[in-house]
Amino acid sequence: PLKMSSATGFVGLGIMGEGMAARLLSEGVAGTESNPLVIWNRTKSKCEALQSKFPEKLIVIKDTAKEVVESCGITYSMLS
Image 1: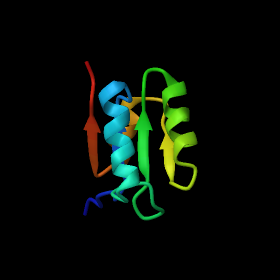
Image 2 (image 1 turned 45 degrees about the vertical axis):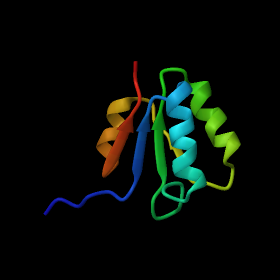
Image 3 (image 1 turned 60 degrees about the vertical axis):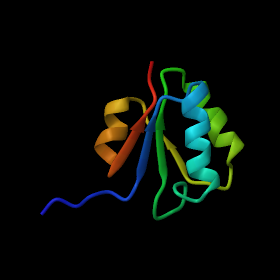
């Protein structure tokens, strides 16, 4: 049987995406050991900035959007 990951993915950390991903972290929806936030953005420095803003949260940066989708039970995308 297929096992669904409990990780939450987020693709696209622009003006809207960064705020939405930050809310998932600040409200405890994602970013924990049991539910990490897995992220990707075309500009990697935006991923690193989100990690710096929430050092106490578990945030995993992936190299591609595909890797985020493949490793998460649910993935949000905010792309233009």
